Image (cartoon, rainbow, N blue to C red; front, top):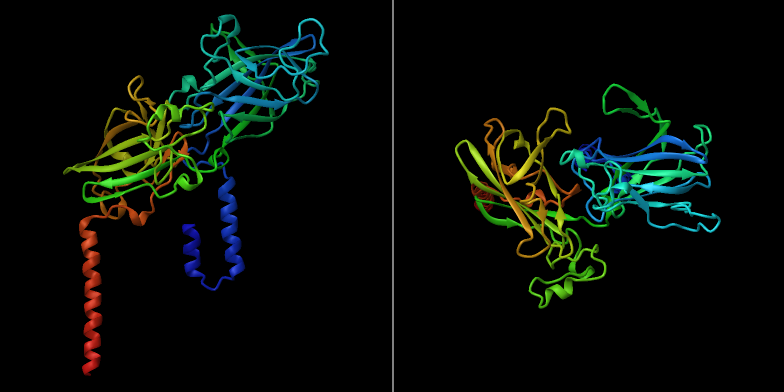
Length: 447
């Protein structure tokens, strides 16, 4: 949009229809785009490896890798679906299970695990017996982000497929893959046959390979995941008494959605409900489940300090393994961080202006539901770079903030706290203009 207004300022004679077309194109592009500028290569890749043939099909290991830097899948976890290309059935599974068996009345003796044309698979829960487990399974569908915990960013299950063909030529690739985490947001492309995966044995002296492999790539779009944003940002500073709140109706308005007042009597009975996944937020002007507050706290000779507070306004959600992504030009000079973990993200090559922050294990990696304990906070100490550092024009505030991978609503730039001298200079300049105008009127009156 900035480019558009710059373009318009130099081409004032553009036809109205062309302007309307430009705006319409931008709007439609934004509402469907799944590309994330801060994580351009982020996706979830599903790999399907056939490891052996059976009398009427094959045994395959399905592996899901979360290559997203900061977007994870929280409880109640992921669910994966697809549509069989022929009349396949699932005889048995390990490390996962289908949500429905379907109609298996045509089979005599032991029925298959699932006979549905479009099965949906979920992960098994922790504590599953060992004879039903495989590696990287049984986490309840929880999948960590790649930057936060790469060892737990992988999930797997084994499936024995029947009535599927017993050669590479007769096996047909499933279609219409879906991934929910646990709700919508992911769009999966078609399965593509790729070179077979190679496996290094435990002695590291022998390499085996899959009989056949295909990949499916799933990308995330915040616009598909929910109709409204899920977080907002408020700002404050030591040099200005003004606290810039989250924009009104950032995530909805009270008139169009239900909310709960913090002082409601018998709050626990009001909050409890059958569907605990549906958000129930505290009544606020912004109506966001999560608010991130950035406070410019102190100014030293060679350093400056920021306090970051994350507040949960959702009475039905505890955020486990939460993370925050902040873009600010001074992260290249981050000196010390208190009570948060930190990892530098460099989506633009060598430019180090994006940081990923998350809680310390067993200390503050769990963000409680709305209430007295529903917040976590930390302080960041930055070293001043004389070439770039300034408190003017909102430079000390972040350019954008993500919470759990979703872009938060920022206040408008003209609402940022200004330095006191900037405000006084504006008032003086306005006063000088008014006085000059009055003097000119008097001069012309007596001329």
